[in-house]
Length: 184
Image 1 (spheres, rainbow, N blue to C red):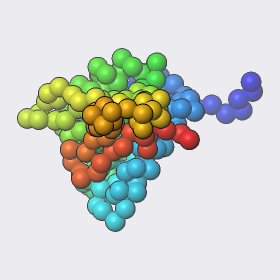
Image 2: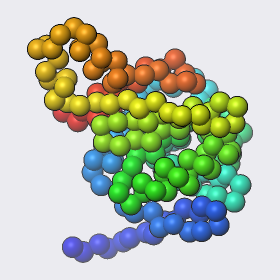
Image 3: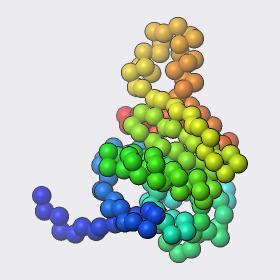
Image 4: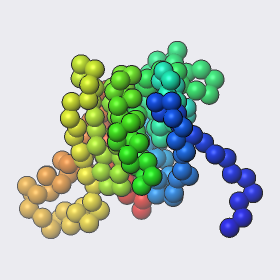
């Protein structure tokens, strides 16, 4: 493998530099699908969606996979200064601890209203209430379950469909996990 040009990027969390690993194809597909979901929904609205843009939160400098910002005064040049309204982090083996512990705590502290932790096939959604993330809801998508829907009783169909969709807390946007995870 011959890489002619490689940039090294770091996030700064609690004053410590963390090397950002390059993403893989699946991570890129999922992130792109989330970006397109918001891009289409926010067309003509004041909020904007960003992919892999620096976010300055106090002494921390992060690069969330997806940021949705509704306050234009936070956007300066190529960076966001302040808390986005919604952040989605797509998990990878090397980012699991960072996304679930450190970043979640920072997003909560600075007032990110909705935080998604995205794994292949599931989205865990944290909603800010009175300055804290009080629990979470997890939604799942399993392509095999969806291919079997027609053969299942209606109660089971409703259960599977119900756990694969949700409405964002800050928009009237229904998120269908099939649109995010099904790459066919």
